[in-house]
Image (cartoon, rainbow over all chains, first blue to last red; front, side, top):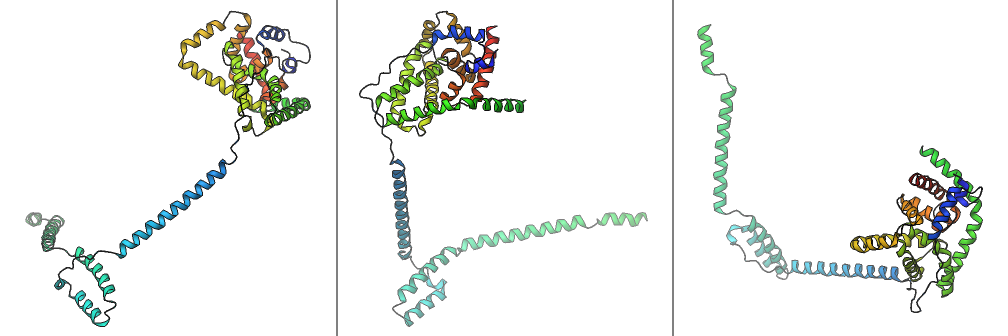
Length: 174
Length: 190
């Protein structure tokens, strides 16, 4: 095979390639006129697309920021405007009662503020204080646990110490 | 083995540099024509069509039935005219339209799968039993890289440097494809 003829038709013609060219030449492109319709138009390039995308992103970011700020403000307001919680029996927490009384006596203008903070604390302490039933249940559980641990200790001691029978038998033999 | 092939390709590339002057001239013509079309000169697109239609025809002939090729060539150039503004490198019009032609051929086969009966009808009208069509079928059975290059060389009568310049492939790879494709075709022809 003549490499150069196959590459750029230079050099001695390769008879086999020439034959193929002749046969396949029948399928060659026949020049035809391109009919461009009159109404066909080139679609315009959208040069401003990246700018629009940037602008849209910025607007979205600003809106998100504003939304977050307003949401945060609302949260603060709800925290400050906590509805008054029914006060627990004062006898259970005597310290709180006295502090309120002291605050009332010392500065009547700060009274509201102090009461608000104390209410908040009271609600916390109220929810944390266990009921009588819970205390009883806890005590029962603790005694059960103590009993169980004592039994376990006893069993452990029994297994670890040598049996009395064995010793006795040894003495008998000896 | 791979090193030897790489060295051979390098050698081929250096040999092909001789034909770069004519290629640059053609590339410049291409750039001028694309610019003219973009500024509203429709006739310049006709000249681009005359320059590149044989290549598009060859690319399609290697992939789709012959009866479909002419219509597809027209379609591809109409599409190219509409989308010419998307071409960033004006000197790469050839590789760009070659890629459009390959994609269009793939689309044709995707659609043909959905309508099998129609495709078979087309094949029956296409295969008239002539020797040229037989050989073309043999070429179509070769790997894709070889079949396109061989059709452009043997059917469209383009030289290796022309194929490289129009399709955007390197001269070395065109040379390798021609050589290996021809070898495989000879084996098939017996």
